[in-house]
Amino acid sequence: MIDTHVHLDRLDDGPALLQAAVDVGVTGLVSIGLDPRCPQQLRGPLPPGLEVKTVLGLHPQEVRDAADVDAAFAVLERRLDAEPSVVGIGECGLDARPGIGNAALHQEVLRRHLRLARRRGLPVVLHGVRRDGALLATLDDEAGVDGVWHGFSGSKETLLAAVRRGLFISVGFLALNERARRLREAVPAIPEDRLLVETDAPPLAPARIKDVVAAVARLRGTTPEHIAALTSANARRLFRF
Image (cartoon, rainbow, N blue to C red; front, side, top):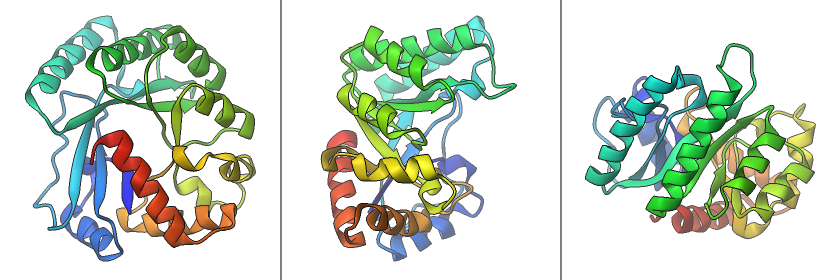
């Protein structure tokens, strides 16, 4: 199994948590950045048998002002040049929750991420909360970028619109919540070649990717083994494992 969304630097007792993930069959994960100025380092050694890829970008919750964004992007460009393990841009996107930040600035920062991803030939990891229409419209304006909508929680209609724009859809811990009706109804509609899984750890431990895989399998009427193999193949394709 490959967990496509983990925040390594935020894992307390990370080595033990990752060893538990390896013990349940995890062979790879994607370490996702919130700010390229942060090192994303695991607090301790990686367990053997685990391949890690890196994605760098500026999360909407970390967007302060235009000058700070410029400083973050300068670091991002330098790290892209220096670190061959970086296989994507993000997480980046739009978020309308109270207190997250300025919507107009979020929009411009997302465009900068998309343009950088297109120029570098890298996929983007997209974060979208309560701005589904605006996110899709921005993708139309900045066409030609591959990527994934991580932690998808939207409707079947939004899902299909995202897939038409070339996105993968990553299903996370909400699949474990029986009250997440909209997502649970959408999961069976994800095309096989566009399905990914994640924990967004923390708060969900990386080993619980096994539970996410099982939940997705139930919703799609298939086996966990099939979903594990399918999503791992898709992750290898998108993130160059």
